[in-house]
Length: 246
Length: 246
DNA sequence: ACGGCAGTTCGGCCGGCGCCGAACCGACCG
DNA sequence: CGGTCGGTTCGGCGCCGGCCGAACTGCCGT
Image (cartoon, rainbow over all chains, first blue to last red; front, side):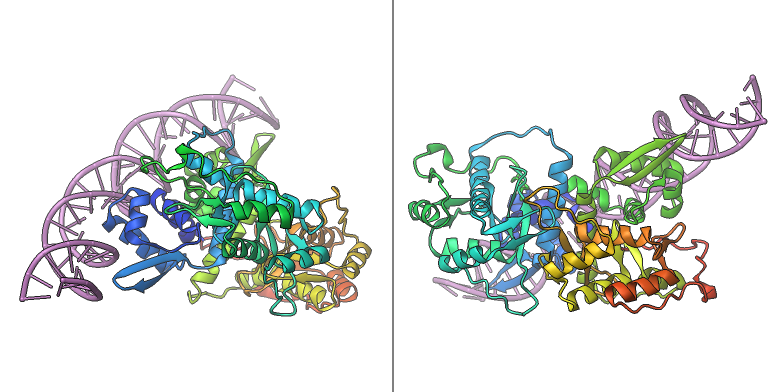
């Protein structure tokens, strides 16, 4: 317990973990750049994280790709971030175009967070498709039908595994969006359908025109797809530490 | 995020937090003793933990009683412990009478863990009273009736709050027991009925004869109440660091 | 064979923080 | 009023660990 918390309790390592919480695999050099440390230092940090099984690594060519080791680790990091966000509320929060993009829509390990994630969750709750509370979530019969039509694969593999919906507290809005198997499937399907596209080098998601229409039709969610018209949306040259956000 | 993890990532502070995860309030001196540090050092640690809102303090007479600040913090600590227990499995585990008592039944912040907690969870699952999975839990109609008869107050205060059952991975057995509102209510009612009694200075719970009968009758759980006949069950004089267990 | 690039290992620097003893504060008691 | 006891503040010590540059390995493409 101490060891795990101590590993997360270092700025450089926490920054790397936060970056990996985007759900994508990243190389050591990329992580070193994001954490503003040299490659040797990053290598040492990553070695420790791998040794503790917080992240996993797979080699392709001469690259080594790192990723969060398991959903359990992702849940833990979410949980730590939640406590950090709730318990230290009034902190100064500089706004930037980069942050605005993240606030609008981003991946949270394997599901969608930000205003888009909240809008989807709100719509599903309002339509009686799911129920979300502090300690868990549930998919109703109506929800099963709607999500099946949407194309999410919610097949309860084992008979006892009927539960797969989990609330995840959004750091920027302090409200719940959908995590767990249901959240992951919604995210997967949205990317598959091209409703969102991943931004390069960040966890932000961009809503496409198809996504705007699809979300409206399928979930009754009305979101503006704003990315293209806004000249400020180009990411800044990473002059400050990458936001360690979930 | 970094700050919170760093606070937990110190042995002395983690030991204190683990002790407070028993659900009871403790004084600074008690915590200093448990963590094997001097009172000044403990005072400093506790000041930081209070400042970060991980623990709360209330003064009575000239004493200051510390406790976990919120269920959110408790959940986070559980989560960290789960990752630590799962990802570093083969570690040497010395057996002792003290540990055996904890393994049998203990409080985990506000609910029951250990073999007793697992037995209750297993029985409720087997009877179709609840469903437990990796990402959440659910109380069935049968479960609501049984728990109501038992005396648990599961009143869904707000209409949207139908969900209140959460799985908690047991560190010693690697299986789920019941946390969340349902788990807290079961624990509260068991103590209220005198089925379990709290041990002094530890998180262990002792099963009473009434508890043995009641658990059998109410949940169909067969547990031996072994505390009184066993001469080794008296807690050792705390010669080693208190187990940082959840 | 050579150069380039990702990643690692090594040695050494240095700052932060955990720790304690001693002293101090405030509440309670006779 | 002194005595005791829980708690905190202060000053100083010591060490762990994060950091980097330089050098080394190993995998590629040419």
